[in-house]
Image (cartoon, rainbow, N blue to C red):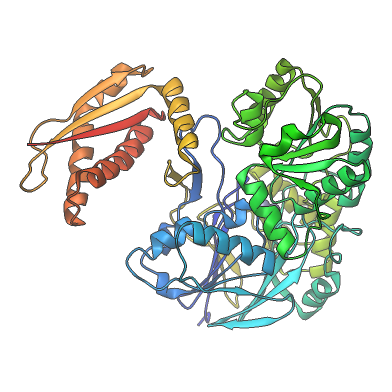
Length: 558
Ligand SMILES: [Zn+2]
Ligand SMILES: [Zn+2]
């Protein structure tokens, strides 16, 4: 008898940057670590979000002991409301969600936006232990580019697993203490079974610079500007926003926050004491024109060139409140996440076109990565001395390089598991091995509950300009809602008309399937049926053509 087996199943985050999600399983009980999303690449036109394929969890919501979130970044937290809403759509009670206060505040705000108010969200303190069925959960304080980041230690009868979350060993963090190396070393001396570590910067030698170096450089950069300053960074990078506020205060400039997520995160950060903005320093977006140019710093979303972000709209002279002009300086206090380079370069080019000056991290050290470099990954390995290692959070190149770092500090190659999404590592008292792959991949979210009407119009325009319009006229029986005639397809501006027309036969099946789904779910209102047809057909067209035309189903009842 091999005894019980512990499974570690990554559903996202391996071989990619984004949508981190891992399922731990022992004796049919599940604990989920992180529930992140990924932003679509430029090719996924019209897709708003990408979620990990969580089919593995369907019908098993009662087996889930809890969901623990390492920190509040979208690639760890963003999929939570979508996945919970789906898993609990049959009325099942949602599992509890755990994290540190900033993380849980951000989780609650997301769940509220999705009207998921009955989810039990619990604050945990680092080192506090929580029993969840066969798992004992403990958070370990780490430093990263957001406060309240933590590693997750999960103890089972087979031993302890440490999932590092995103981390760096910042010796001079701008907020809170350095990472709890003491506890990490203790976990090592108690005998750690498995380390699943952040690989993001495995390719960078040495140690990452401290976040504390950013502030003085921001101030120097600001000093050289005579006009308005627009700083863009991740809305969740509360430390960075704080340093922008400090630099602005030192130079007598007021601060305006642009972008919904920027205002939301600063509010949450202020209420939890992670960000301190002097009284009277904040200026509303509509008051921007009331202040002289040299008295203002605008902090904006859009550092990644996101299509609907405030900076992107300003760059395209399409922002309702702020019009950029010559004399303005735009400071990128963030670097593009791999995959976003094109969108960021395009934004920068538009800014030059308007006449703005642009400062990026290539011009001045105004960005410090939140992820440790190679020597910090080695430090983590040496502190925790794990029996097994599974690199997490990185493309395949970084996972491989992280594996080599583990070898370099003396871990046997046979104990290093370079995994993939959907590939479960099974650990028993005898050893560890990869088991048969489970389903994994991407789920797209397309236009459900995003922003305001203006955002939707913008998205429709973008889709129209890229992939045209795909109108499907469906004729259904008034009596039973079944399809009574072949669906008619009308295409305008679609760059692949032949292929699209060839889909006619399959499309009819897709329409039938969608209608019978509507019938089986007892849906009779035409607009709801139209909505279901839209979702199903958009997915169908994308799966066949890898294109995202605007899909417009028209339901005619006869
Ligand atoms: Zn991450
Ligand atoms: Zn992160």
